[in-house]
Image (tube, rainbow, N blue to C red; front, side, top):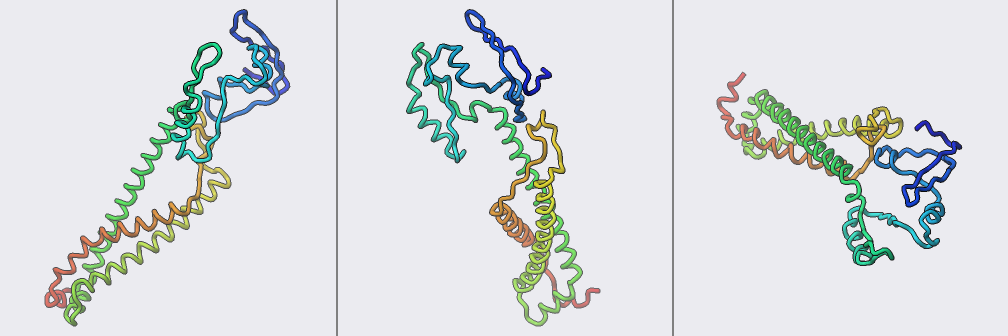
Length: 251
């Protein structure tokens, strides 16, 4: 529309009879949501009340802000129990909607992103597990004589397995440490400088958002360490099949 602040615009209201009012543009907002930016204009409520013949205490809607979205359904139900059965003077019924019901396409899109994130995490863990299993098998094969020597001096299979599992867990922990250092550094730079940009019309955002939740980071690291260590129990069973006599001859 090529409208700028301080411009005067004519606004037509489809009433009976139709009305026109001139307004001065005080500013232009941008939320990133086309269904808001292209369809909604903010104005003094007094003008709307005057055009509709309302009193100063009459409005067409009321917005309630919730601090906890997890309780949004409970809040919606409570609001409906308070005003859901009330009617306007013209006989129309009051309606209560929450943000999920008003903009379902946005939250469906966010839910799809959450699903993609879970799939990506699963793939990363699977690749890490396969690499660690392969690495442990190679380590066991390279240390066959060492395993045979330990068994020859009286070490039980579980004690030998524990040595290799501890060594593998140490390698996993070191990898997680470096991964966290690099990942958190990149996240900080993105949060600070918005290096990765997004197409706002498609993603509703101008850059990739980054939010640090230390509890989630800690749980993800702990879960990865435990799961991969458990996966390593499978190749560790090779140790129980090592014959001390044959392994000491192994070169």
